[in-house]
Amino acid sequence: MPRLSIIGGGPAGLRAAEVASQRGAEVTLYDAKPSVGRKFLVAGKGGLNLTHGEAMEKFVTRYSGPDQPNGFWEQLIGSFSPADLRQWAADLGVETFQATSGRVYPKALKAAPLLRRWIARLKEQGVRFEMNHRLIQLEPRTPFTLRFENGNTHESDAVLLAMGGASWPQTGSDGKWMEWFTQLGIGTHPLASANCGWEHNWPEEIIPIIEGQPLKNLHVRAGDHLAIGELMLTRYGLEGGAIYQLGATLRAMESPAIAIDFKPTFSHEQLVAKMESVKRDLLKEARVRWKLGDAAHALLSLRSYPDITTLASEVKHHIIPLTRPRPIDEVISSAGGVCWNEIDGNLMLRKFPGLFVAGEMIDWEAPTGGYLMQGCFASATHAATSASDWLKQFA
Image 1: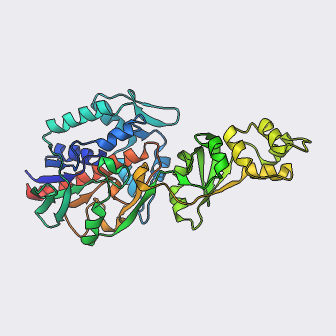
Image 2: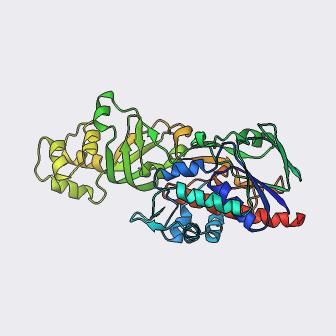
Image 3: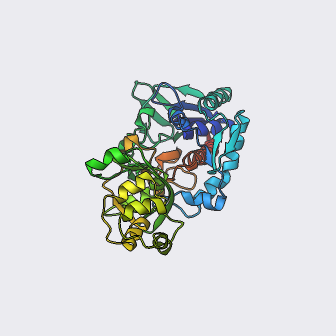
């Protein structure tokens, strides 16, 4: 039986093991930690957002990254769709539901029950698990020789790498594989914080007022890109779905900044009309007449306004300069990784036939909302299918 080694026990690695073992490969899954699925369990703390229910035409546009092949995400998501992911969960006995936001969750809002059933299925399919095996060297020729930190070595006919990016390093995805990819001459882009908060130097006196306060129903722009959603004010800056969506744009800006429209359902002229003939205490009156929340009022109070027109302009276009994203070891996901021109349509490295990659190791990113999990499942399904087909030559 042809042998496939999978490195990494996150969602992508587990899904790859499932697909390859179903297709007849002898699968051994290695992970540096004592157990698999640690990042999966971290995602479960938020209810385990598996995927999203929006139309496929919109869904596939959520994935971005430099030099991605045209139409590739349409192919990936088309071959393992959100509906397929929900059916996969159902086959494990886990019912899912779609929230009003479009996000899809297990009905129990927990990751552990699903993970236990998933691991049980993999063991029934003959997948072998080797824990506490941190890969430190790979000799990229058939058969592949894998050397681990604990002194063990293993030979394999093909290898599928699913070691993640560099977010949540305590779960095992620390990005250290980038060093030996460079030694192998495989092109990569530096790993960077994605789906993360951004820092801003608030005046000290305002921090006790704004910390932990939400800004809701916003339009937020960075350059030409618009995000609709919410922000959370923090001691160090801003968090929240709206700024997560703008991460790639902000990273590309020489002087990153966002412009907030606090009242997107009203025009500038309508806001001015609501103030009628107010001549003084402009911000105090605007807080009532425009129904400004506490956090918005606090931010606007950092500046002075000579007239209603100026205040309305600020409410429609409040600029906040940003200094940097939060450190990568605390963010939800990372951008960067293996360059797309290093892999073929099967997610196999062009320079090393039989060596495949999946999940966050590849240079793509997507916003929160189920797209990250779907991307990992879909890329792993594709890579594992390709790897098992490639292994047929050894049967």
